[in-house]
Image 1 (tube, one colour):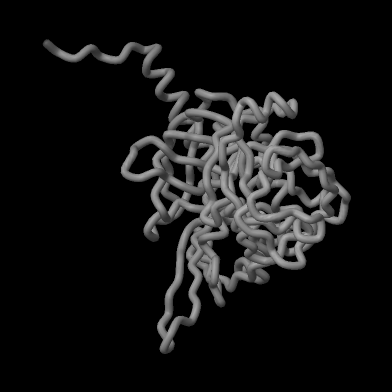
Image 2 (spheres, helix red, strand yellow):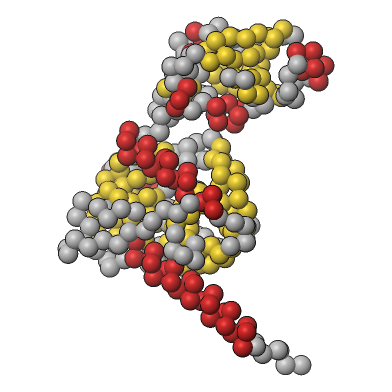
Length: 330
C-alpha cells in the first residue's frame, strides 16, 4: 500500500517550519564562532579544548562555556568567514559553566555580526528550539527540535547544582558546547552546555536570563562573587520525632564533616557532627539548598543559622565570607 502523500496544508506547514529555521539561522549563524584553547603541559606537551561560542556585542565580546577555555593559556577564535583572532578570557564561572571572551581585531574590515539575548522566562515547553554550533570543526552546524522541559537542574563539573536549565531534543555534540540555543525569531534563549550520553534527545542549555546575570558580573568583576561559611558536609536524615519536637519543616539536613580553620563557621562556633537545618529563616535539607542561599548579597552580613547538636536545637549568628577561588566547601 502506497504511503499517503502530503496534502497542500501539510506542505505549507513544512515550508513554514523550514522558513522559520532558515530565518533564525540567517540571523544568528554569522555570530557563531569556533573556539580552541591550548595550555602547556608537562615536558612541553600541549593540550587543549575546543567548542563553540557566539558574539553578543558589536565590539567583539563572546559567550562560551567555561569548560571550553578552562586552563587555557591561549585562545583562538575562528569566525564564520575563516578569519582567526586571539581571544582574551575576561572571566569565567565554572559553577554555571559560562565564560566571556573578547577579540580586539574581529575582522579585517571591522564588521562583526552579533546575536541578541532573549528572555528565557518567555520560553514555553513545546516551542521550537534551534541549536547552532561548530561540532568537530564543522562550521555552523544546525539542529532543530523543541523545548522538552524547563527549570531542570544539572550538576556542574565543580559539583555545584545549576538551576533553571532548558532541556531540548535538538541534537548536540560535544563541539556544540557554548553555542546558542535560538527561537524561531532568532533570539538566543540559552547557551548549549551538555548532553547525556548514551541517551538520545537529552540536551541542556543554560537559560539566557542566567547568562545575562552571570555575564554582567563577569564583565564587572572578572568572576562571580559568592559567599561561603567554610564547612564540608553531606546530606543526612533528621528523625521525624526530632523535627516535630523542634518545629522543623525538614526531613534532612547537612551533617558537618569538617570545619575550615579560621572560617566563618569556625568563628561562629560550629562543630563537626552539627546538623545544619536552616539559614536566614529558610529550611536547609542539603548542600544544594545551602549553595542557593550563599549568594553575593550575604557576604559580610550577619545571618542566623539553625543547627542540631545532638538532640538540642541551637541558633548561631554567622557572617559569611567571600568564597575563595576554587573552594570545595560551602
